Image (cartoon, rainbow, N blue to C red; front, top):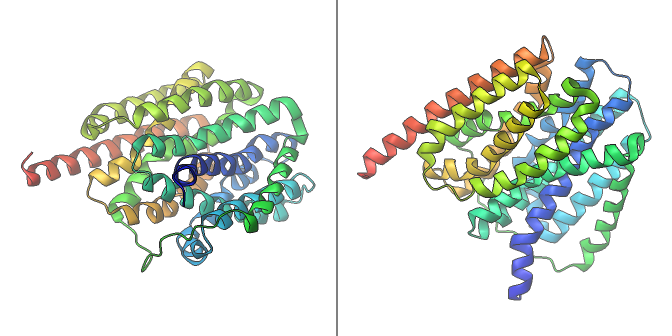
Length: 344
């Protein structure tokens, strides 16, 4: 493989894959505004893809042997197909099944994206790849703003990905002996990804104002992903940044001021970039990070559903403050103990 091809696979492909797969899953959240579902049913559809993601450690282990290009382009093409079908049906059962399927496909694409980003050896590439979540939200908001109820149709362009499945150079992924999970990594991702998942309820809180809030805050948050990827002193992030973001989220959800929610979005998403670095600093083996993150995505389903059972604003505020405060304590104590053992 040439040096240029290697750079494309390890740098550009993971960023593109994570961004486009995020777009195909997140755009449906805005599309729900054009469907007549009550809050409980809407939140079930919002969180359904995260049920699909919990199967990723199994599905990825079965399919990675087909190679990077077949896996990435094949799943992107299928995600485009799912969006296309979603745009022509309003049946809840069908939509629920499609959302779960999109979660399975999303897990495959993002797992391969994270593997490629990690192989690049650059924290910045990891940060940019994780930032694909923010880019996906921005693309979704722009589609909603420009196309309204036809916003899912642009995903049909991803059907062209199928053209590259057989023709593009195919690099077989490194084979692992078994699926590995880490309790530490799982706990960190369950707690640390809460800001990203709780943001799914903002469109229902702000209504039409959420489009501009999403475009502005998610665009800026991409810079936060890059900035956080340069962080070296993870203990300080745990001690100061996590409680700060938790407190900001509490105030933002209680007040529901768009500019406060935008600030929380930027910093909350920025945390995502440092989570893989954080668990690595806690001594977790790299091969255990991906499966742990995918399994933790079940909270992406549970969080919108649970906060939707009562007052969405109050529940979101309390949950954000609690989870980031707990994460701050766990990570700080763990890294402090590791530092004592290593004699640093």
